[in-house]
Image (cartoon, rainbow, N blue to C red; front, top):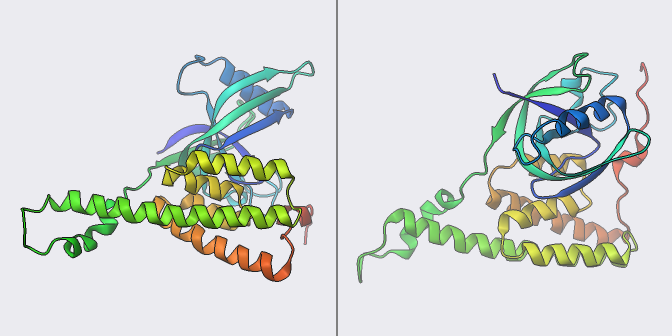
Amino acid sequence: MGELIPLFPLGRPLFPGVVLPLQIFEPRYRRLMRDLMDLPEHGDRRFFGVVAIRQGWEVEHVSPAAALYDIGCTARLQRIQPQADGGFRILTVGGERFRLLDVVVGDDPPYLQAEVEWLAEEEAAEEAAGDAEAVTDGTGPPAPPADEVATSVARGSLDVLAHGVGDLFTRYVSEVSALGAGAQGDGVEAAVRLAAAADDPEALSWLVASSALLTTEDRQALLAESATRRRLAAESRLLRRELTLLQTLGAVPAPLQQFATPMTVN
């Protein structure tokens, strides 16, 4: 049995550390907001889980568990503003990742709930353990413990990888802006966020995952990756692919959701 949390399906995934503003108008999610407001303001339970809806599927028309991706992220409530019509404007930020084990549908509460297991960020140091021997030749002063060497090597190579992804992302943002796919202010905002994440490989990886114009499948694969090193390596490949497409086609791909149509009995 996993932990039971409120669930909020959306058209795209949420990533840790990413700000998500929402306007709440559906009755069931108004109830969710009221339930969260009843919890202690400075407690750690004012959150709900965000999961992406699979392309072209509506939760109401198929089994909720089948309609949703299985990896999600909590949205932690930062600000809530009740509206005159009974709705809410809220500001959340991505928190912890989780795996969806089961979806609970009921009348009270009317919103979906999910049984989840929490996913931890993996340490990358052990990935460099095989490189540790390359920096110790058995001569000179006693070498530091192997785990310290592995950690040092891993951190150094991770920083190099993050720097490369940062450079690729800067080029990518420039290309997208030059093609008119985003307002100038969007490019400036991306540059500011990139600067803020420059010294934090994990934060950089989530920034790229949330900002690049990728398919939902690509984004989900990045969200599911628990090692920052492997996530950055995947983003390096994706950014190179997207840059090639931008420069070859001279156009930015439209989000697939733009072409989604309601499901039919066919």
